[in-house]
Image (cartoon, rainbow over all chains, first blue to last red; front, side):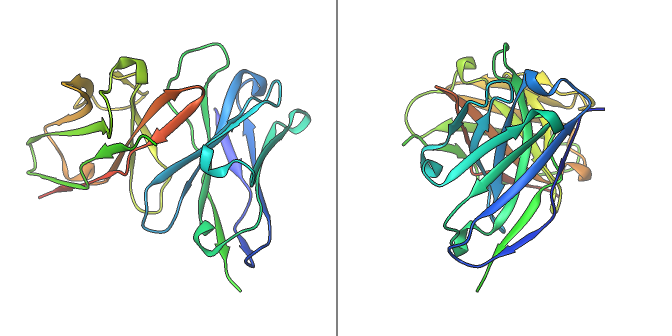
Length: 122
Length: 110
């Protein structure tokens, strides 16, 4: 079955960077966009951007440009999201989720990874 | 910057019908925004319900339906059940490879 498995929880100090991984399985990795979405405690979902696993091309929400980087390793069907210069309000659960195929119109974000809790504290 | 709007909270009686909406701070939502809807319970990842305005995701009961009502996307739950008490999020495709989530609606069934 299609599955996304994320790396474990992280605790970081302000100003540090965090890199979260998301391993995909059960489908052809290079045929679907992978997106990242975050959710701060008690808050709503926030779309961060996507990566095209085939080309490595990315598109980030305006808010995150300059301090988020999404990459992929096709050999291990894994994508990564790195966030730099962490602040306290970056503390959140970070989700990866599969988006539409590279050749289709926008469809559902399905499935979702289990989420990775990133805590930011000195 | 365009904001996607949702009712912060809504209440429905068991067996009743409720319609949650998803709008824009400026302009109207149409099928071109490919609206999709997600259900989330505490501590869980979002669950896809509806995409492309009105297409139910796999395994979603037919009491959930999506549509465009006036200038907004809508999620209607017909015959609400206690298990439907959750947070509901819409997301719109804004073009240029950009998506934006609404703030979410907390649905209470009582």
